Length: 499
Image 1 (cartoon, rainbow, N blue to C red):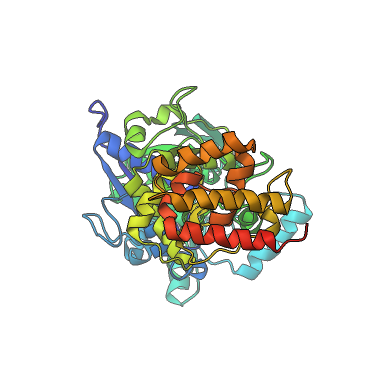
Image 2: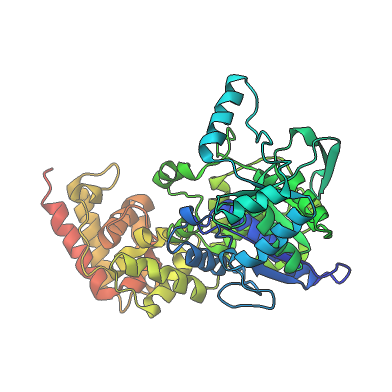
């Protein structure tokens, strides 16, 4: 339901195509999407690809695919266009140069000709004096005519923002409130590199203004340069957007910031911080959205289960929490189970099919639709369906003979139970639940054996597993002839075991 009391928000998700879409980026995109949909505004995808050295081939398409998998459809972007394009920063170089020159001409920025070697020497000297690394201001007051001559002569340069050295600067974050810093501790940051490409500080400010962005939602790693971004807007005479810096993600232990380098260790446990991995690990996009929505935001102190429309209705910036959020994969498993159980049988069958096909099973739609209701309560991830229910698609199964021996019984006694069970099943006209279960329950009463013993032998014989979907429902799907053949095979195996 659109909140009519709020002005339409224009928000942007602006990732760099330098790697996989991770949880932090997905959460930012989610909050962008929710605010845009809630207010009847627009959600913009902008690709910040000015760091050409770190670009990863295919990363942009993976970002797009990840957003669409999560259900976060954007209104404007590099692949669909829009009224404020282009939506890749590498295609907007001349725009940034125009505004950089405007800052220089107005005295808010300057050309810097210091070489990397000189800057490194300065940095080392500052370290020796135990000072924080910063630009020493050599070119800060360079005569404009001299700068023009050096540029004309082909000398390489960058453009730095001329940060005030006295007084304070206050910027306001929606989550944290006003933040005031002493200007003397701020550096003269580079805003245009020597290759003419703008750095984030200038490019994002220009794009946010020209694209009419009303809210900038981003990670807390931008807090140290937040004052600079406010200064750039003010220097250009632009109204600032509402700034929203989200909480940091901590490792599952709660100790230390989560890093992309943790991937290998997480994957060993069937977890990942990358959206593409979560998809292949059998997580539902609905569950991932539910999970990440609550890492830094809450609706109240007890409601946790949300789908995307719920979140659009209930989300608010005012309930964001700046405190670090530990990544809890157990919670993801919990949400995934809840969302799996909320699917229709048809939807669940459709979603598990690719996992069966990937493992080489010829999983037909009709059988999957019969399987879905009996596994839905038992799986936490979609990929678990394959190990749990793969026996439905096997021509033959090979039980471990020793596993056919019921607890507390010998191989001979287990074989006798299997023979009695087979005789009952073979005499039945079909193996529907209502046909097969009553006579098998009667066998339990007459034999004195437990359900665990009798049905355990049957389960191992028919599925090749100690844990499986409900036995009688499984038998009906496996089919009468196959069930009887598997029971006969189990009897042969049991009789071949030594007493």
